[in-house]
Image: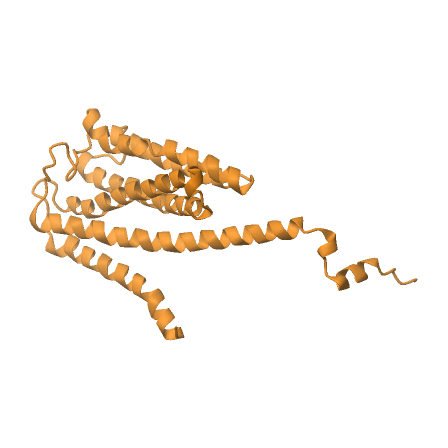
Length: 254
């Protein structure tokens, strides 16, 4: 494969994500009309809903990869690396969900934050996975660290359906699900539905790109850690002959 082909292969995913996001911006700000009730503030939905769903997806991938790691037959280091990489991207999307949700709440509810069931459970979700990522950094043998991280990831994922169903289970300021509601009757149609779908597609592509980059970095980090450990555990007899000779040579008399 030529160098130019490699460069094109690397640039193509970035160009695809950029194009999808550009289409989303045009649809959200130009093509889609303002909401009859919320006005232009409703346009934040085209960002808020996709990033929230992609956070769910990221944590779902983390949970699935963690489960595969815990099963002896499918235990591979790549599942642990994938779980950690997806969780990091999920944390970014969760934080973005809270931020743009607050920007949307200010003109609609008149406040930046309230102790609403959806908001609180989402904040808990963010802290659960921040704790998971912190646990992955605690020094320990690689296998033990991966197993305990996988268990914590599966426990943390319990909060994902709680977040989604919180607006159904409890009285809340947050609106009911727009698409995946209990009646399975979407409350959005036409160009607005198309724009929301484009948002989901664009941010899914962005998630896959970020996940690919973070997974590659995680593999490089794991290989570097293994190399450092191997060098640290190497017996002195494996040292180069020249090094041993220099170390044993007497110091010159002064």
